[in-house]
Length: 322
Image (cartoon, rainbow, N blue to C red):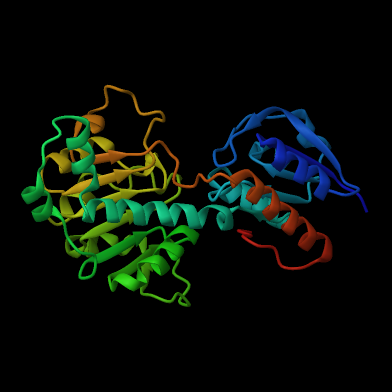
């Protein structure tokens, strides 16, 4: 049985060829406007109303109003626009599965977070700054500021696929790793608590890694109270969403008691050139690239085609959120 599949993915030629070849008898509708794989476009497209299956970043209201829709495959690790009571109720009632692409992005994002931590431990930003400015040979202060990973406590806030993979990458260092998520399942391989308990743990944390998704509940989750609770010398990483952080409060904490922050996401994006975070010597920013890798589009397509086959065979879907 053939289906009509809609996509607004902005794919490389090789990934598009793989998608078209892998669809077999299915009909492909490409949207008039393409979307970046890991960021919601949020605009309607008439092709959605013709589709049985959508892949990419569809507009949620159209999905809810489409009588034909049978399967939603999102191309991002998050599902902010679909993570609402209205969307869950409507699509669950109609038995329309919604899947994300965490399997594509958990590994690169976890490696990016590990790179952040190792860069701070080995003081790479300091040496890069010296090389690009004064070219001073700052051996003694750089050695004193360096440290070994091993005795620190790490809080992973938003214990999804990225945090889970990061916890695995951190195991060889012997760190104390604790996770926090909206609803702990109880089957995690490390201690995991509800995010409502985080404030009690922040004062003892050496490293805090934020991978929270964007939502009404997580808006400015890391606020003045959270940063003021963190211990002097703590390190903060954000690879979740910029909206989860009060950036003015973060800047004040960095000018005060925090050792460093490493940010892959900000609000807004791009971060304006006049934003004070750019000029803080202990704030290090990458331009929302943690999930990026050369074959990213090919892996997104392969994940969808794998799930498409499972859907047709009635098998469990990978990265299904509801």
